[in-house]
Amino acid sequence: MQSESPKQTMIVAACLCLVCSVLVSTAAVVLRPAQQIQKTLDIQRNILKVAGLFDEGRSVASQFKVVEPVLIELAAKRPQIADPSEEGIDLKTYDPQKAAKKEHDSIQVNPPGALPQIARREIYTIAYEIRKDDGHLDQVILPIYGKGLWSTLYGFIAVDADGQTIRGITFYQHGETPGLGGEVENPDWKALWPGKSAFDAADLKKASPDHLPIPTIQVAKGHVTPETPQAEHKVDGLSGATITSNGVTSLVRYWLGPDGFGSYLYQLRAERAATTPTSSAAEGDSNG
View: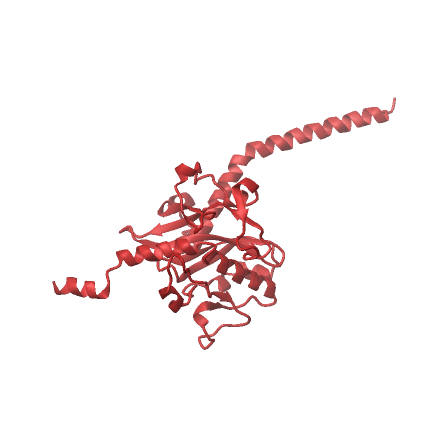
């Protein structure tokens, strides 16, 4: 029997590699739509969870109908609501995370260093409003991200219609150390956030379009008790994960602050004030 020559072996190997490459590429193209659908459903599931609305027994798509995506322009002098049709953006397919990595779809973080280790952010992002049956805002879900110890943490934070009270927080993507920084996924730790105040009440009273309040919320070092000074603005630190804890503080403060969604939250507070009767007006109506 004649043995195969080196040339024949190389040809067989090349053909095998070519066939495998074609199969893998074809599978990637064919499966991409399904992968995108699953990614979208995962994002929607996390939004519903942080809003406290997720029901395991119902489809995600049907539950998400109560959520209204809103396009936010971060590149404006003050971040503001934008019209998706005018900007040529489809809210169903737009991916802010990908946009932040493209130079023509992103801008530099301003001021530099405000979001530690993140140099650029997307020009447009999406907030998610949830309204009551009467049309009044119930809460808003904001996308947040920033650096931990080993990775960029991506998540959502839910803020009450008062633009101050935190309703929940979740991180759906990160590479932090399991048992340490990875505890950002721990339900017990996430349960500490609802009811916390993002801003100082006195600073909120002085707020204006040109004077947006600076967030005071933070992941503290150690355990927070009712006796802890300013406990309403503090959450227990992650044991053994100081850098991740500091990273969470930085990213939450940035995205709720003047350079993140601060102006948008101010608009929501103004909307709520305009639609909420004052105590004196309410008394007048009852007397009448």
